[in-house]
Image (cartoon, rainbow over all chains, first blue to last red):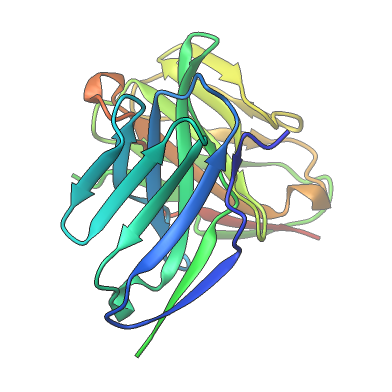
Length: 114
Length: 114
């Protein structure tokens, strides 16, 4: 039972254009949603998050949108830059059995083409 | 601050051998986690700890053990290594009072069991 899903394994975008990465979830108890970026041979690094009580959070070129009725969130990167090429993981946070835990999606590999 | 450090970076084990993956954080975080990432998959939680002396199982604990004698260290022990344990292992830590439920990750240990 996959509670967090990223249905696109890969995405290719031209430099300067908008990148949109999508994520779906099934559990209504998630209280925060996070996006992580991962380069090869490195650990994931935190990018941006959104509380379940909000519908948008913006940080520079990165904006996360949350649609609770559809149980869907998306990450927009505008404008896309070559350094944005990485694997992006969506994660959802919940307090479960007395501890805060993250559930991760499978990841989407973003490639920015010059 | 070094953040979260992991050793070793790479290791090859033979079936049946044992080893300990080391993880140390210098941020005084109460929460620590161990994940594994298989190719094309998201991160799966192996074990977690909410403080020194307190550990609990995650989603995929079989074949692993942990201990947490100090706030800083959270080693992961593999007993009787099996090919199914070939994976990349990530340690993470979190300050529960931080608000965003952001976890900080180490660089990972790539383990191959032959």
